Amino acid sequence: MKRVNLDHIAATPLDPAVAEAMRPYLDGRFGNPQSLHTDGQEALEAVEDARGRVAALIGAAESEVIFTASGSEANNFAIKGLALARRDKGCHLVLSAIEHQSALHSAKSLEKSGFSSTLVPVDKDGLVDPEEVRKAIRKDTILVSVMLANSEVGSVEPVAEISKVCQAAGVPLHSDAVAAVGSIPVDVGELGVDALSLAADQFYGPKGSGALFIKKGVRLLPFIDGGIQEGGRRAGTENVMGIVGLGKAAEIAGLKLRERAAAMTGLRDKLIDGLPRRVDHVVLTGHREKRLPHHASFCVEFIEGESMLLNLDMKGISVSSGSACTSRALKASHVLLAMGLDHALAQGSLVFSLVDGTTGADIDYVLEVFPPIIERLRGMSPLYTKFLEEKRT
Amino acid sequence: MIYSDKVMDHFQNPRNVGVLKDADGAGQVGNPVCGDMMTFYIKVKDDRLADIKFQTFGCGAAIAVSSMVSEMAMGKTLDEAMQITNATVAESLGGLPKNKLHCSNLGADALHSAIDDYRKKDAAARGEAVVAGTTAKDECYCPYCEGHLEGAEEFCDHCQIEFEDCPHCGNLAKKGAEKCPSCGAELAQP
Image 1 (cartoon, each protein chain N blue to C red):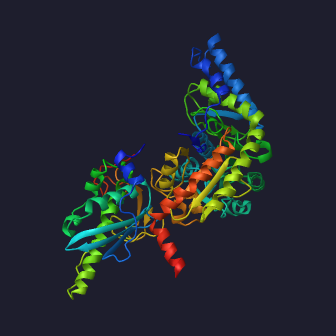
Image 2: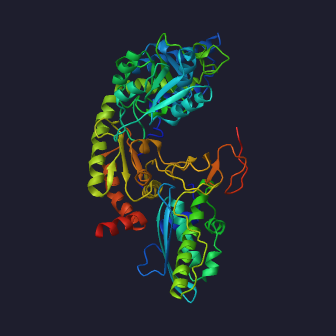
Image 3: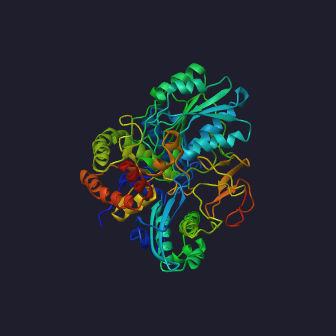
């Protein structure tokens, strides 16, 4: 059967050129970058070369990039490391309500050691108003963390404007850019951020490889103690293969990002315009224009996400959903609820995320198989029956 | 696949989907806040379930469970149907993922609620006292004080406990509790 994978917020496929760059480290090159002999120094060169490529992609200096094992680790590192380093200045954090769990739970974990946090609301499109950030900042606020793009609804946040607010208040700003880096141009200077998280598996690189940008001069407590790696801030033998993969993926993203984005934007719009035209009571989630070029997310009324996901899977289409039933915790998406969607509508969440190589025929296929699936599921939905009855009376 | 073949069969080809316009009894459990919602309609003849129809808003497991319950109960006497439990439903489906076990609670509850509804109407029609005791659960309730939970199920306003989900059955358990109040599983605490 034809398979159309439109779930790339979970992971992207490895670019063959990235795999090629990584292969030597699977096939024999095992040097530890901390060893002084030739094997070790070769590995060190590879790691530092990758650092340069990652720095170039986001407009940072090489010394401002710390490698991590994931985007989640980078978020933990930034929030805990920055907060604990500034403890003498205060103990209050400001985050947006739609941050990734790795950011929200880092703040929650800090609450156990005396910190407190304020969650800034978002509007119906999932956008943070910089003015709301300004209002949330207190005298004892020591860190603001607002994501650059939300992977569930695709909205791109006004981080550059938020950074102006933070600078005026003298509070450092971290941005979780895991969903954004590699998909849209990201420049840490233009954004004005002090720290920024990214992950390789979001842009055709390997899993288990991420990085944290930390602006020169900004104090950050070590995340893993016990070694001199990553400037003593993250001990542990470097994941050389993963780092090399991240570096290669960053290099390719720098060259191809705009071209990839242009191709995917057209297809994304075809889906955003086409789906609600073919099926009634389907709403776009996230901002129509200020969104990731490969991201189309919806809520389908009267049906639960997992049942749609499974039906689409049977037709060869992979998607993801933010419905409670698809999450292992069986909780409705905090992002959709923060945007003011009611529980029933949030349950009908569906996320399509395109990839380099998605074709017009793929989108046509989705548009073709989607309506009968929805019709069938609505036929067995008590909420739809109720809606039709109320409409009649 | 997270589901057994049997679950997928009932999910893809659900039996007895629909609405009975002239139902003798109807029952509804759950709501979209909890995640799933099911309505059951029954026709009763000579104390037996002559026809059953259901509608379900929910995940694959919830749809399969509803379908399985309808198949298991069809033609049974009302007392026999009241014996159907979440455990027998899950077993008949070849098992359910642990965090989806609460869906099977709902399936049996929805059927039992329709039977209760029929019995009440029937008793009233014959001028008898209304049979007490309904199993209907239209809303989310605190497993400790049975107080009604509003909105997100993270905190009970009545007895002031914070919840987490039991990793074994998916039902609510008190944060830090040693045992799940629903399935009795021991909860490992950090």
